[in-house]
Image (cartoon, rainbow, N blue to C red; front, top):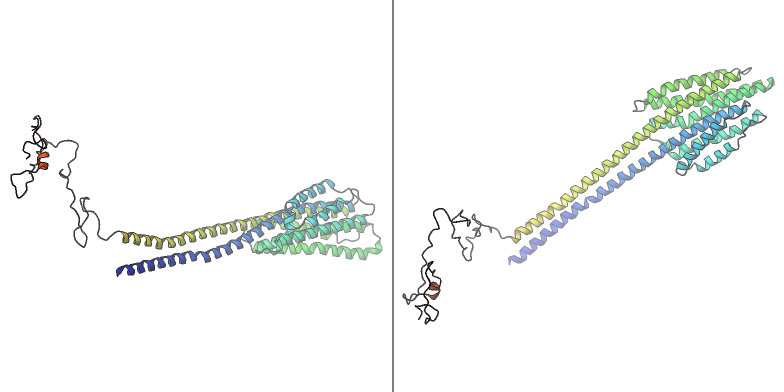
Length: 434
């Protein structure tokens, strides 16, 4: 009657063990979901950060194109040959960058149009300076549009951190606009020299508008850089930017002051002020781009650390779940081993016979005792010689005390050195056999 109960108990134990194992394994489902969500979020942010860094590299190459193109425009308006070598070098570097990141940033089409426009620029200045002004103005407009495309496609326009957002706004929008506007302001002042005095009012309004196009982006640039310094955790951003920013402000103000004299602007002074503002803007752009790239690189490193933490947390969770799943299995295996081994069965202290259990001493034939004393070995006789063998008692039957067992006589030892007496007429070769 106890067998069905034992089977039912075993089945219940197996069911409980299986349920505990399934519960432990089921914990992996929410852990996996959380890990997948965290991994996807970190991976998206890391990809966006890397794309922004590619945009920074593209902006750096466009900065060289901007400087070379503004110089070429000023030279063409003034009747000088364009700086073709510098412009060609800057275009080649930007073409190489566009090959690397154009598909990712979706700038290949715009750069191809700008590249074609730059290649179509005349090697020699046209006879009419106004024609040179018109051609180069169209080209720089395409350049500023490419800046906007890089900002939008790289994600710099949507940067989540305040310091990096202000930096990208300054270097990708306001500073290029200010540099191009400074070149146009200087060129307008040069063009005003050859115009009749009857157009003085018109010239004054054009120069005022050109100054506003320079001073407006420059003021926004200063505001953005100050906001970036106030909202950043970087220890080098403020010191590196403020000195360059002060020099750029002074250069822009000097250029604006020289162009207020509409009667007789000095082309040499205006050109020198434009070159000074352009040089200061170039140095400021390099610092901004470097600091922006440092901020983005630090963000990428932090995201990589978050990814490693997520992987470590997943591994730890899996190990804990496996441990929880293994404990019921080990407990069930131990219980099964205990059921296969009867309780109380073991070895005695001498290791030769089973130990007595709760039910009493074990049944069965008694163990064979060793004739050697405890601790004796077979290496040689003990000190004092071999002890005498115990006297062997012959087996006799109860009915015939005088009759000896052939087996016992057969096993009697023969003393050494004495031949055994053999009776040929005895049935078994024994003289006493009957």
